[in-house]
Structures are given as C-alpha cells and as structure tokens.
Amino acid sequence: MHRSGATMAWNVFKFCTALRGLGSIMILLVLGVVGATYYAVVLTNYGPALYAGGLDSLVALAVLILFHSLLVMLLWSYFSVVFTDPGSVPPNWKPTIDEERGEADPLVGTEFSNLPSDPNPRVRYCRKCNQLKPPRCHHCSVCGRCVLKMDHHCVWVVNCVGALNYKYFLLFLFYTFLETTLVTASLLPHFIAFFSDGEIPGTPGSLATTFLAFVLNLAFALSVLGFLIMHISLVAANTTTIEAYEKKTTPKWRYDLGRRKNFEQVFGMDKKYWFIPAYSDEDIRKMPALQGLDYPSKPDFDSQ
Ligand SMILES: [Zn+2]
Ligand SMILES: [Zn+2]
Image (cartoon, rainbow, N blue to C red; front, side):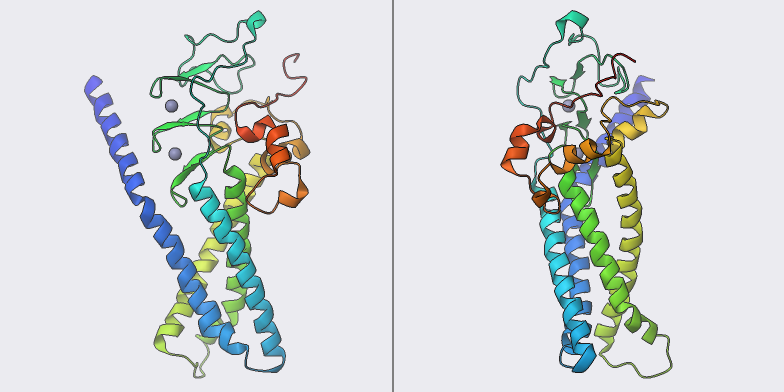
C-alpha cells in the first residue's frame, strides 16, 4: 500500500514537472499559430486584395481592420492571463472568525475534509503550504502552491487560472473565438478553391499556409466555442471548474447570488472595463471578491 502510494506520488510529481517544462513551448505554439494565421490572412490573401479595386478592396479593408483589432485584444488578454498572478494567500492569512458558531478551527479540516457545499464550512488547512486556506482556494500541484478561487491549471497560458486572472482568461476565450471564426470565414473561399479544377494563384508555400491556417482556425473555433459555453454557464452559476466537479449532487450553491451579481463578481461593476483585461480601481476597492479572499453567500443560505 505504502509503496504504491509513493510510486503514484512520484508519477504525479514527474507529470507536474513535465507540465512545467511544457510551459514556454505552449507559448511558442500559440505564437506560431498566430504567425501562420497572420501570414495566410494578411500577407498572402487580404493584403494583396487591397489593391484589387472595387468591392474586393472594401471587403479586404474590412477584414484587415477587424482581424487586427481582434488580434490586439486576443494577445492583450492572453498575456494578461500568462503574467497575472492568479492569486496567492497573503502570509498569515486568518479567516474572519465566527466564534459563536465555532466555525474557525484550524485543526479540523484537511485538503479534502469538507466540500464547498458544506453549510458550515470549517477553515481548511493546506499541509503542503503549511497555511490556512481561504474559502474557494485550492492547492495547485503544478504551481506548487495554493491559488485563490482556483479554476484550473491551464497549459495554454502556462499559469493557473484563479481569482485575479479568470476574467482575462474568459476574454481570451471570447476574442479567440471571434478571431478564429473571422479567419475561418474569410479563408473559406480560398479553401474551397483548392478543390476546384481551375488554376489557383500563389506559391506552394503560401497555398500550404492558407490550407493549414484554415484547418487550425476551424479546429480552434469549434473547441473554444465548447469551452466558452461551459464557462458562461459556470459564471452564471458562480462556480469554478473545480467546484463544479466537487459539488456534483448539491442542489443549492451558497455563492450563487443571481446571474447579474455573479457576472459582476468576475467582470466588475464598471461597464467600461467589461471587454478589456483590467479592472477599475474603484471596483477592486469596493468588491472583496475581486481580491479573491471574501465571497458573500446567499442571504437565505444559512436559514435553509
Ligand atoms: Zn497549498
Ligand atoms: Zn497551477
């Protein structure tokens, strides 16, 4: 028993190390896909079409403006997820103690001792970090530390997705979906041309890149759409991916404050900031949830 436990821990450790090593490669892969797509859309097809004259020029101009705007938003969101600390537990963090109900007892509760659906969650303790865990906080074995409101560890961004960068991650999904859909639609006529009998203009290299860019962007558009739909339903219910796995059969969820408030807890209350990977200073000051340490429960939760 002990042996197999140790072996498994070792395997998990090796797996996590491999994931960390994968890090920079994934960023290069993302930039590679962006580069190939840029070459196919801008340099090979729609850049030259600008000089075609008439309607073709107008369509090319519209595609190029939209393509570049979405690309700026996509890369801005992407690097915001990569470089933003998802949220670490402040040193010596202590819960606001509710002594009457005796909720704060650091000796009870280990990493798995209570589910978030527990009506009286006790304070959890992380043995690996040797510190108390705030509500909704989880230990990430890839990062090797506790992450506030951890959603999942994302290999594409080489970072954990947690309280402080979840919005940026959602915007990255959103802009990636729009950009890959635009690319798929704008390259579709060129893709269809491959299967026609006529001669297609272009060097073998540019034709191959167009073909590859179309297939890659179509694949990304479809898979990102699936993720986007999943995360929209998670935001609407104020649940993280981890909590969605954990709660399984719980009909009620203590943090679900209604769609509007759940949305604001992730995106902030200032509409000007909803579509950019940033928050207004006022939102950060006014909303403890944006700092990842304090999440209000449903007002009627404890009485039920
Ligand atoms: Zn930990
Ligand atoms: Zn992580």
